[in-house]
Image (spheres, rainbow, N blue to C red):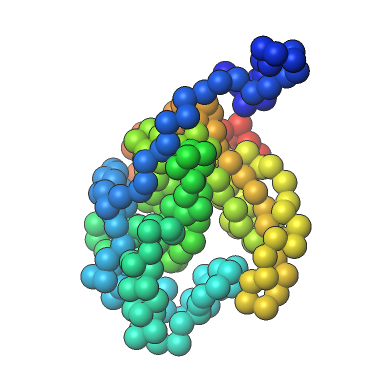
Length: 238
């Protein structure tokens, strides 16, 4: 079934969306998503020290975050991490490198189980995570978890429309661009237009195959350089 398919209403003949399974999706939980290059697990206070080492002094990480950062010191950062742990939406996960410990955060958020819609957001990638296989694998693991395990049919990515790296990442990961939400937010006292992207459950098998082909060890040479770009596997321009 394609996203834009329709069928006639039995009483009026007007086009309506096809009937689908309306069983609510499940809520995210404290799972450990193990990959080849690292893992994704529920954010805990024990992750804070490693995360702070990874992000301290990197103010550029926080420029496009809508309501927090940068942090003046480790104590304020730890307090923020602990405040995130208490929330069920967004539900926060640490991205853990087996050698360096926690090097990033991603959340599942804007959770609407009845509509089976969920978003990945509040993504904090330290320099140790950026442009790494683990950075890509974490997105693969979370997408698979949301669609395959929890049962969501729409997986969203939103970002500040001025955040060019985030917009490139969305396309690279296989999200479809849907448009700009104008004057969508006031973020840190400034206007924010928001770019909107999505992956649908019917699109996931092809996206999953692209992720898995890119993440395979044979896609990297002896120096760890990729042979085929994920954007190419997804049929997108870099």
